[in-house]
Amino acid sequence: MTTFYEMGLSAPIVKATDKMGFEEATPIQERTIPLLMDGRDVIGQAQTGTGKTAAFGIPLVEKIEKGSGKVEGLVLTPTRELAVQVAEEINRIGQYKGIRALPIYGGQDIKRQIKALGSRPQIIVGTPGRLMDHMRRKTVRLQQVSMVVLDEADEMLNMGFIEDIETILDQVPDGAQTMLFSATMPKPIQQLASKFMDSPEFIRMEAKEATLPSIEQYYHEVQDRQKFDILCRLLDIQSPDLCIVFARTKRRVDEIFEALSKRGYLAEGIHSDLTQAKRNLVMRRFRERSIEILVATDVAARGLDIGGVSHVYNFDIPQDPESYVHRIGRTGRAGKEGVAVTFVTPRELGQLKQIERIINRKIIRRPIPTVNEAIEGQQQLAVERLMKAVAVERLGMYKKLAEELLEETDSVTLLSAALKLLTKETDTTPVVLTDERPQPSKKYGRNKNRQPSGRSDKGFYKGQKPYGKKKREYQRV
Image 1 (cartoon, rainbow, N blue to C red):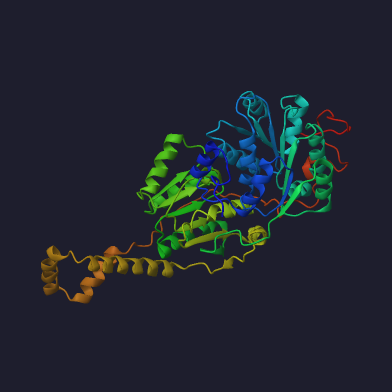
Image 2 (cartoon, one colour; image 1 turned 90 degrees about the horizontal axis):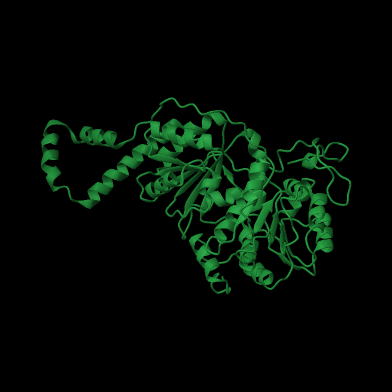
């Protein structure tokens, strides 16, 4: 494999990729980046988890000059979550060059976005509906855009955004370099490429196992109310050296780590509401192993440089396969083995199947561990601790005391008492977590009778003036 230094990238980019923990380019990065740096249009057919964000993010940052004050790069994504994730990764890539990306998407106060646009980001990462809203308001102008990326184009097609994309691309200057990434290539995507791309290079990455083979992956089918007790049983059975527990929301992160602390586990939580000073403190304690369990949201855990993690627990199943790959990739590093456990409610089995298709790997179902298994796990750990102390052999000062005790108590009883003291008792301190309805996945959660992209059943949007050549109305999304 090729390193980013060997690809001839600038020092700020190489420094950023090194800090992000990228040691070598992935296959799609190795094949895509040179073509994009050479100014070619590129179509990349690749699954999530292959490193495609950096495949287009690195050339975007590399080719844009700092200080232009204009939007020169545009990335279109199907969902707000992906817009945020892509913008964050581009910002990490551009951190030493001074190139910034701003996510704009529906569901966030548009006035706040307009204010953020005043800081003149060079790259916009947005969902089609909200981007067109800014175009109509003239708060985003595309006259200076020289590079356009369509990320997860097939998903934007599934969500009914294809006409919106065409409207946006009509406003981009002729000759702008275009990159299209899609897991599949249905006919409408091919037609879009034919219309807006100039002799594109086609790169197809064969679907393969997108997750490390050194990671043991399995799931437990559980009810939401069972999750916390089962997590505690697994922690007692497996006794992970360092582990990360991923939860869906910031509130749930707080509740889980506080509940773990009540039951005697060394845990802390991290999410985006914490101050940077608090986040740094939590991470330092985790790296120093003064805490053993880190409870985190996806956003907080992205980009963290953490070594030695033996287990990852998906307390809540991730909402998209790429998040799953990012999560479990925190373990099984540097050739070491890792374990990834996912809790799946009956309603979320469809999302699990979607993840399996994307990673091209079957995730094994295992029975829910029992309380007795948790107790046995702690007893075995106590035995291991005792035998480790025997192996050290620095026991001289204790031998006389042991001989005196053996005069009063038989050896079996004495050893049993020692093991009992070393064994962590099962804690049944009551814990109540706020009920959270599982979020639907992008593909399995949509109502089949609902029109895509906010359209009414007549195919029009509500509440806005027409934009562009076609007389259509757009909803703010």
